[in-house]
Picture 1 (cartoon, helix red, strand yellow):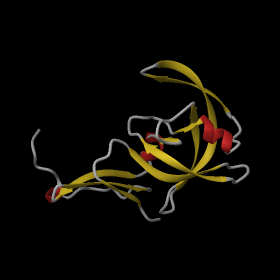
Picture 2 (picture 1 turned 60 degrees about the vertical axis):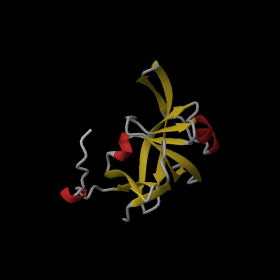
Picture 3 (picture 1 turned 30 degrees about the vertical axis):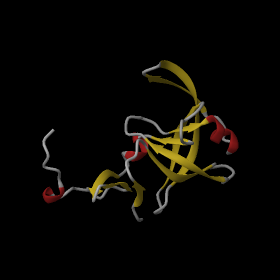
Picture 4 (picture 1 turned 90 degrees about the horizontal axis):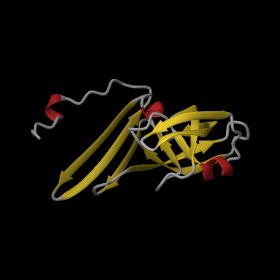
Length: 150
């Protein structure tokens, strides 16, 4: 399997990449915009995507966030990324995900190596993400680590 790599021109406020999701029963696939969120425990999809894919609700689960506790719908689907990553997983429904259709949480990010870099050359910034599953034990060599102090 190849790593999933996405480069962004300039500075970015959020990591949004292309992905595909698939209904496991009908095998219907859909291209989506995925927001990578290392602060999220679970992967979530918008209500619109659940409806478009005609996903069958498998249950309800209680979730807690800074806004309080609420009950949300639970579904199963397959997440596909370029490079060959495919994972069948439980996802939770949000009424809306700003800027994206699916939120990729630590339940997926934790399956591999996830690296975010920001490089500046000649006053031009470039951001890049790298995701590889299964983990290859990615280690940044000492000569590549930042030596700047806060």
